[in-house]
Image 1: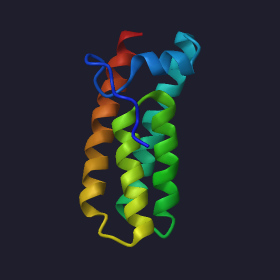
Image 2: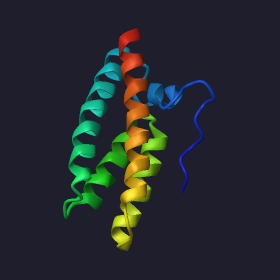
Image 3: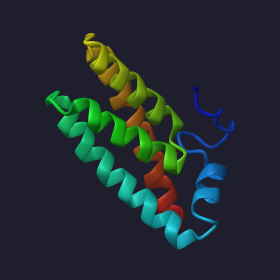
Image 4: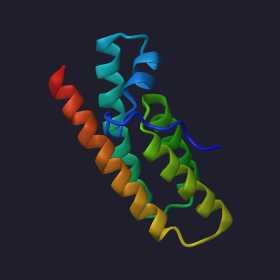
Length: 115
């Protein structure tokens, strides 16, 4: 099931979704964005080595990304998870995921600077 479309001006993070998930609490929003950014770096680093649990790592990243409204990351992580479970070549999807995470992290950093 595809993720909801992003609003035209929110970049890599769906701001409305994030607001709903954090109940409009700016402090909580700041906290979950910072946690996502740190977790994403660790997961991308681990996924680069394609460990035996790479499918589970991709699944974790997918859930975290959906929680904050980083739907491009969630979609790419879901595609990676599917490729890994299907035994295909993950290199192209992993590159897409890296790009999506980089875009989301840039958006998170910008949002954290504004708060």
